[in-house]
Structures are given as C-alpha cells and as structure tokens.
Image (cartoon, rainbow, N blue to C red; front, side, top):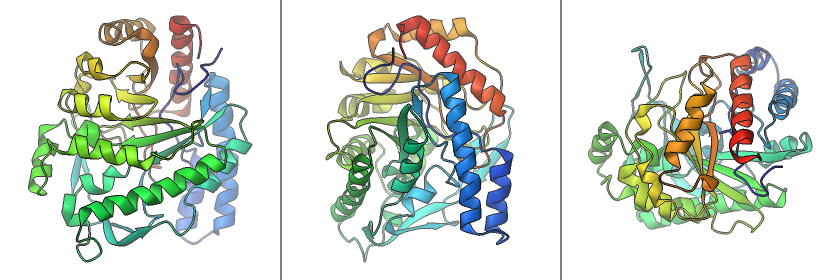
Length: 372
C-alpha cells in the first residue's frame, strides 16, 4: 500500500531524461523553424510517455520530467517580473568523476520590483495531473538561488535599498504561485535548493565571503526564506525540499557533508520531507541526521542519477541500515540523489538505465517498508 502522505518510500527528484524527439523539436523552435504550438504538441506526447514510464516503474509520485523547461530553475524564476537572466558575471566550475571540468557563467539579477503578474507553471501542473492516476508531484526552484550566487550585488539597490523588502516581495510572489498550484489540486510540491548543500563546500564558502556575505549566517536566513515561501500552503499540500551539490551533464559543483548546516536546516525547515544526496562520499556521513525532528521524513538519495551502472541492492540496504543509527528507519525513504536531467542536455545514461534505477528503488522500498 502507498503511504498516505508524500514523500513516498520510493520517490524521485523530478527531472527525467528528455527523449531525442523532444530535444530536436526544442532546437527547431529556438531556430524559428516551428512555432510554439508545434513544440507544445511534441512536449505533450513526451510527457504522456514519461508519465507511463514512471507508472510502469511502480512509483507513486509522478512528474512531467520538467520537459517544458530548458533548466530546472531559469524558466520558473524568470517568470517573475523583476528577475532577469544574464550570461555574465559569475562562473561556476563543474567536475566529473573522470577528471573533466566544465563551467557555466549564467546567473540571475533582480532588476526591478518583484511581482507575479500571471501564473508561471500552473498550466504545466494541470496537464500533468490530467494525465496520471498517481500523485502528481510538481517541482519548483527555491528562491535562495537568486541570492546564493552574488549576494547583495545581484539585487538592484534602487529597486531594493532594503533587503528585507526584497525577501518579502519574493516570498509574496512565491506564495501566489503556491496558492494557485494548490487551487489546481497540487498535493505534492518540492522545492529544489542548491544553497544548503553547496555552502558546506569550503570553496563555495570562500566565494560567498568574496560576495560580501557570511556563510555562517546563510543557513538560518535561507531556512527562514524557504519557510516563508510556503507559509500559507493548505493543510492538504505536502512540501519537501531537495538539496543538491550541482547536477549538469553528470558533473557536480560542490562537496562536503551536511554538518555545517544540519542543525539550522534540518530542524528549522517547516516541511514534510528532506531529499538529501547520499550517493557518494561527497555527501559525508549520516551523523547530521540526528538533527531531523520526529515526524519529518528523510529521502536518502542512495542511487546516482549521474552514472549508468545500476546500484547493488545489498549496498543500498546496508546504507539504509547505517542511516537508521541516527534516525528512525520509519522516517526514511529512498530516491536517486538528484534529477536525471537538471538541464535539457541530461546526464550520461540512457532512458533504460533511468527506468531500471527507478524500478530498483521501488523493489528495495517494498522489501524494507512493505509499502511505497
């Protein structure tokens, strides 16, 4: 039997590998060769197919794979008035297990007063819910991303001489979107947050200091901001937060265990569950889980979305057992450590690899908890 409230025993982060037909259609749309309605028709077919993939794998939570987005965060955040994307000013390095290094320089700037003149992705949710009999899970980026990369310098001082007003306007804009998602029937909302995990990396902390911020202050600040984003959610909406150390073409951005943020974040976030990356030693040990209060679930990201090899079942079982030394096993769930395609390029594995990993999670969860 499935759990009565998300997160589920076998869950997933949200983004899934885009099929080639969808990638080709988006490229043609960007080149002006097809119109938006033609692209939407391809997106619709691809989303119906990926819903079927998730349902056939046995998952109780189903997403649209973020198939209508170019990236996990940009499409949503630039939907607010006053937030613009720029390709300049903030290079971030990514690295892979085989020593490759890449960088991205895009960032967001607050150029005016933040408002939400219209719904951003409620129509995306409507289509998802209409095409699945399972729990329709919707993912949105956390608001902290804007501030994490650049601090005060990315917020226009003329628009916001007072940072408290900036945070208030941003929270209000989020609350409007969350309210409309709830009215549309959304009962499972996930916020993706890169700040909590990356700020455990000393290199990132140095960059934060260079931006004029104190990395020791940010976990408490960002926890308060995330809580404010969903403060008015209805009782029937379950909310989770996913933490991430970077996920781009099977590369990562940061390393380091959760100890530096655990007390402020794990105990302070007013959510139903935490998705925590635990697929490699980059995430550190399970000891920080001691700060998770009773009644809050932790979804252990024990399966990698970055590599094609399917994990060993016994190793996953051992890792669950290790985690239960610090938190009641009844509070645990399992998932991939991140999405399979945080950007439309996707990670270095196949759709078949993706499905086999999801099926493994369902099998292990059934074995451990007897439910999904």
